Image (cartoon, rainbow, N blue to C red; front, side, top):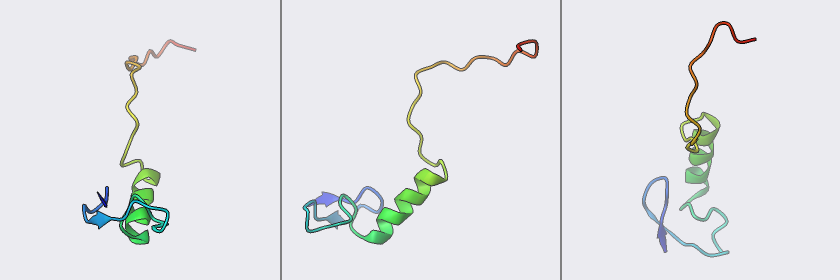
Length: 56
């Protein structure tokens, strides 16, 4: 058993659970929606460059 990454409830981490590592299809869909809405982001090591109006 592992903690569901979305709600924290126990989730079976085995092939018998098609939603793994989530506890339910709902938690899996909610998490997918969060990625789609850009609520999660992969960190970018590239520093941001200031915008230069004269750059073509």
